[in-house]
Amino acid sequence: MIKTIITFTFALISCSIYGQNSKETSSPAFKIDIEINGEKYHVNDGDTLTVNNNKIIARISNSVTFDYGILKFDYPKHFAFSSETDFGYQNWTLDGNNFVVSYFKLSSEVELDMLIKEIVIKFGKKNCTVNKKTSKIGNTSLEGKRINVELLGQKLTYDMYKVKSNDGSSHFISFQDSKNDDGSDSLESIETLSLINSTFFIKQNKQERVR
Image (cartoon, rainbow, N blue to C red; front, top):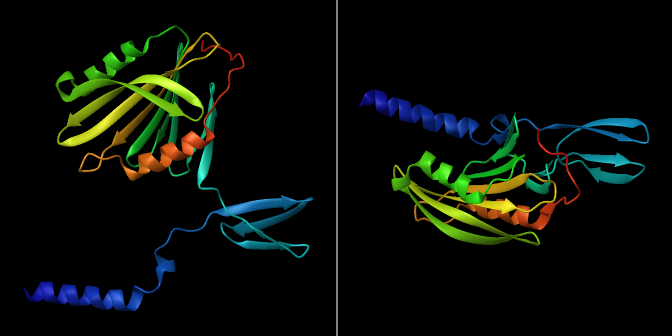
């Protein structure tokens, strides 16, 4: 008991002495290299640079542009990017804290129901219900399916859509959201989909097929 009190008191003293200095616990700022008319400048993210009496604020964008296959859109910069390529297959994944975006490109004609069936098997049929899902992403209406999953007390939804193209390949985009405790959409999913919706673009020029 005494040891607990001493430890707690020490923690309070530590908070009192050091708690006000947030700089000691915040992440280091990103460095930004800027070149203007051959003149190079090195500043931190958020710094103000004065050039010819003009104030320039150097700031890293909160979003990143995805530009692969036939799709182009912005997504939050904290999402982890990964990709996988195999014979006749490419996959890109953007992984957030509660929300995951995946894009699949296959060289042959593949139906959406085939992929949905495989994903249901992965989650376990007894844990899933499947419904039709129609969404407008950007200016494009997409037909797809939603898999409602309840696994180990956690609820999530997996939405997958087939994206029409003229390149001879099959394209699919999916959105996986880990729901809040009350079953509502995660804040990350709402914010990310809003960003994607405002920047979503399908490049319909003929693309090289996956080999």
